[in-house]
Image (cartoon, rainbow, N blue to C red; front, side, top):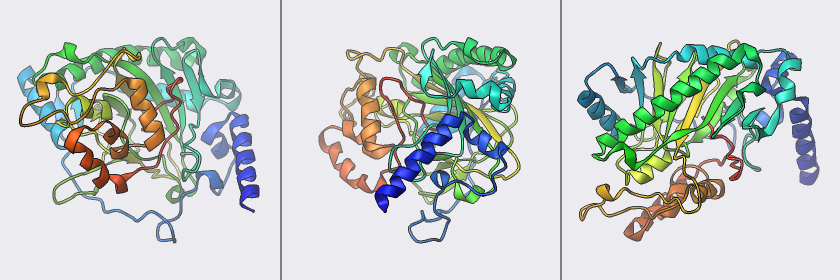
Length: 383
């Protein structure tokens, strides 16, 4: 029976991807119940994930119009305490990019389905990115238009949404480098110590769902990069987890703030900073059966990702009082660890050294649901 169920699920998934319509296509077809491959167990049913408490928390806001010294100090404090913060007065028209992503995903099926592919074509994909086999659910309630470095061909997408995304990607390149430089300065090192580029830009579309409590926009995870910059519309649904203190393990809503970008620390920067900075665990819950949520996430990683390009704790951050907590690694090696061990502690702890290996054992119960990562194609992170 189980073998037959697996075959039925595989056939249903194949048919879903062959349709080229994504989750939006299902909604357009008028479904009233969620297909099994999107479903999570309803809260309170046997085997379901316990409902974790939520709490209020004042998410830091960094105003870039402040003097540089103040900005550096505020960014460093936010990166050390919670790993996520808003940025205002950045001079970027993020709303235009969000609108362009919405325009693409709401094009007629005949216009967008020819672009549907799970693997990049000329540096671009449009699809519902599957989770790893055995994950629950198998698919997120989300379609994604992704652009991969170094030179995605924006000519692949319709002209009606092209110019705004080209402009945004160019501005993000500048902004990501500026933010990385500020974060490094807050660590007491120069910006040249860790170069970054816009590794992947992902235009996410979360359609309204007839049963929002039975799906997820994304499972809880950390990001496999240096940092992530998020532009979002006004629907909401993003949450991050507080680790440490009286609210340890509580989830915090990240409500949209008009004009603000959201910046969060990724696992690569956590390792390079020798645990000075926190890589924040976050997830996306679907809130509405009426409104689609749209966001644009840009993930920044080092441009040099060859087998001879090594990363690890910066020497300036290694002292007699605080030895190096991680060994050197390549980005390919890092992504393979993510594919094998999943998100968060069990993945990054593969690189721990010395007495810090003991921490790996203590984190063994914290394994998170894995995502699919094709190392050669660099399939996008889940945010």
